[in-house]
Amino acid sequence: MNWEDSSDTADLSATAGDRLVGADADGEDTAVEAALRPKDLDEFVGQEKVREQLDLVLRAARARGATADHVLLSGAPGLGKTTLSMIIAAEMGAPIRITSGPAIQHAGDLAAILSSLQEGEVLFLDEIHRMSRPAEEMLYMAMEDFRVDVIVGKGPGATAIPLELPPFTLVGATTRAGLLPPPLRDRFGFTGHMEFYEPSELERVIHRSARLLDVEIDTGGAAEIAGRSRGTPRIANRLLRRVRDYAQVKADGVITPEIASVALGVYEVDARGLDRLDRAVLQALLKLFGGGPVGLSTLAVAVGEERETVEEVAEPFLVREGLLARTPRGRVATPAAWAHLGLVPPQQGGGAAGSGQQGLFGA
Image (cartoon, rainbow, N blue to C red):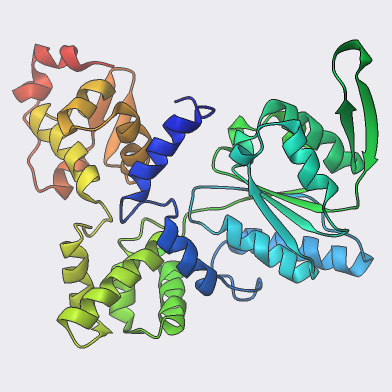
């Protein structure tokens, strides 16, 4: 997929945002997350290594009376990169400016932002891998020398005017660190990779959010929601809100394991966190193609979705859960996929999986 094509990316983000278990933030998430975000590193749950390392970086910077090193945070959506950027600003007692890579399409856009920064200010640049190349090249000098060259005029008569910048801290966030050019990655003093959360960590996130939302939930109810949250706090908080709605309307408002299970069943989120799209992909792969291998385009047609939607929205979680494998011949279901859907794999050499027809569905 071409990530520089903003229209394709917007369409894919809209598809992902429609899902209850999608990790991208929608309008409601943005509003609620503002109230649920932890304010300092002590409140932040999970990411122990990143938290410990970042704490050392910030403490040392405060002791020197200097701005903190530039920070790069990578990892899947919904794991807390934006929250950590706000915590960095709070810990340093500095204001924060928030923008994103897609919003900076020209070097002049970046120059306007950088020239208006205050000393010590934190600039949070989300989706930094989607920034334009001219802006990236300007950012190199800004990060290293706190200076940018503003070009005035065009052609042979163009003049570069150096503009000094106050010391600032850049916090870059990316879901695709591999797309960042090495010169940009090398200019970050600290790089932290955000891992998916363990269920026990998500339970702590859910209990904390429940207190802030004034929701009564027991230990079993939190565990039930955590187990279906795909290792992502944003999804855990979203599921908590939907279960809260069900508990208030259909029960006495208390979230128990039984209430959580029934509520998430209504929203078609199963015990492993799979939703309608995930199960449709697995069912097509197992029932129509005997477990594969089958080409991505054929699989997308079978479930009535775009190829990019299946590849970018559904597949990553199915692969991470060990339910689907990508092979040179196409997509293949694992034994865990058959077990999860309660189906029996065809005998070796028999059925669709063993017939010569499967070659039609190769990658």
